[in-house]
Length: 165
Image (cartoon, rainbow, N blue to C red; front, side):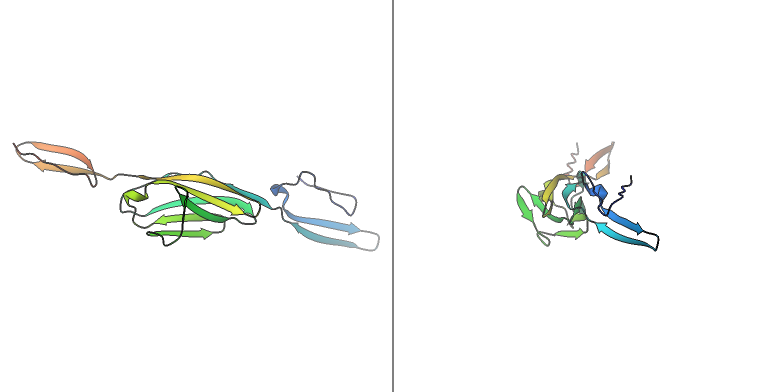
């Protein structure tokens, strides 16, 4: 989709982020041709991709990810139950890199499970998404040998009670 003009003014109706880019102006007469370029930047508030819920086993590493499209680039904030979370808070690290932010748990505990909110902010506005960190269980096959053979499947961390007649 190109734009053109026969005058020294190029009018762009209904400007949007998709019109950002490099524009070229060429002037020509019988003596010479001259070309100049200009880069058009369109600022817009953040839009955030839908968060993906993450299942993590107790004691394992868990990573929540957030992505935002914005100009100027967005700053990120993470929340749990309306409380802002900061890096190095209870074994948590927040790492921002351009359009992405990661909230990393190095040793997931039961208390870490819950609903987290990623907020992307720039001078034009903000957007957020919710991500649930939930428990993912490892299953173990336990074999008890006695007069009978008994096989049962348990979740890691469950209590095993064995009764002998």
